[in-house]
Amino acid sequence: MGKNEAAGNYDPAVELAKGADLTAGSYDKTQKISVSAGKVTVGGKPGIAEIYGIAAGKQGAGIDGTINMWLSIFRYMRPDGTTDHVAGWNIPLVLKPGQTPLETAKAFAAYINAGTRPYKAKAAGDRTKAAVTVVFTGS
Picture (cartoon, rainbow, N blue to C red):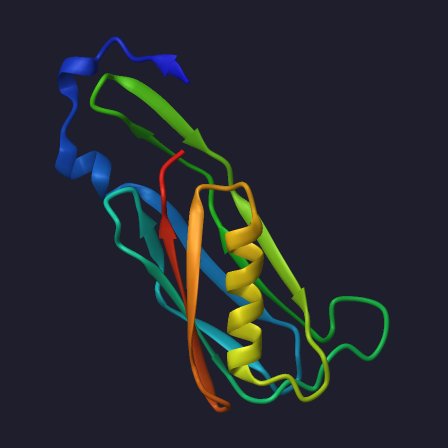
């Protein structure tokens, strides 16, 4: 963190709207993921990824049978004029054959919640469709 000489230029509406871009991708034949809310903001707006289908799962070497979420790097200014730099995060999961969307969502949430990054996640859904909600908790 560094001191910003423009501390008087702090605009809460601008700074609270900053955050990580949430993207996702599936390398599984039958389980897919899409992002329905792609910005996890400092002000508390969550990112949401939705998961569909039963997983074919990991069959061999490589990325086939995996599913991934990414949170981009970003910066924001605090009210005291300091700037926080938040690192990006690649979150890969290896899928098991027959894994449901809810099981995948719970695995993403558990991984995020166990990490040291400034994010928390919740999983919700059922055997056919589930969602992972990611929020920024501060650094």
